[in-house]
Length: 89
Image 1 (tube, rainbow, N blue to C red):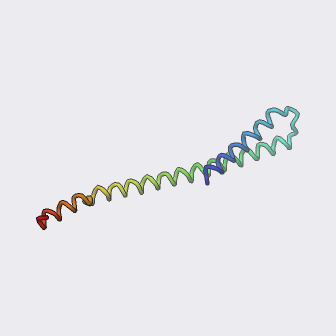
Image 2 (cartoon, one colour):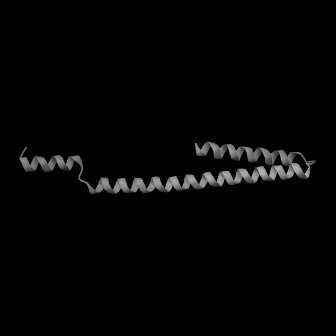
Image 3 (spheres, rainbow, N blue to C red):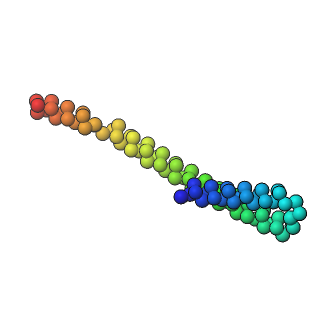
């Protein structure tokens, strides 16, 4: 979801930048509008990039925690072997 909005903002910024470059007789007001739109798009991209980075960090922490818990607890195979030894199965 965030990536789609980021791509949309990038596309809009590119479109506006291209429009500004291809129309040399742009008025000062139009130029300000383009700059404002580009700046808003850049802020949106940075906001979503920050959110994605935070989510990635969180996901890595969860994966690391789950990996540690998995390695810390005995596997089902080890539990089965232990039970077989204990009950001489």
